[in-house]
Amino acid sequence: MKTRYLFTIILFALALPAAAEFRTIQRAYEVELSNLRLPQAEGGTIAFKPCSNCPYQTTRVTVSTRWVLNGQSMSLAKFREGIAGIEVQDRESVTVLHHLEDDRVTRVAITIR
Image (cartoon, rainbow, N blue to C red; front, side):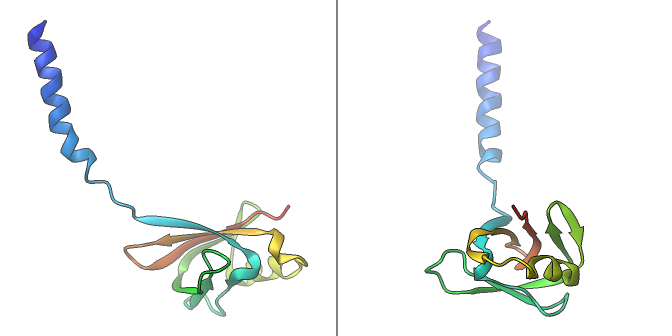
């Protein structure tokens, strides 16, 4: 019994350094639609304020950036059309997913209520 207990403790001790190596690769921001500036082209830059008092943060987007409106992926042009009709932009939140290592936005999503 002592052998099993000792073996279990050794396994946990060996696994501890592996758990300490986790890194944050992507960060998600929930941004008010009024604090979001969409790119003009698929390979441009997007600007957003992580908080209402923060300065704008500008990050690249690529052709592989996913634009999601109400759960449906679409092109940037259709995404822009879809949010153009929103009158009160302070009430809508957009999720911006930023890949930290590549320093680019990988996904922009909004669900219109």
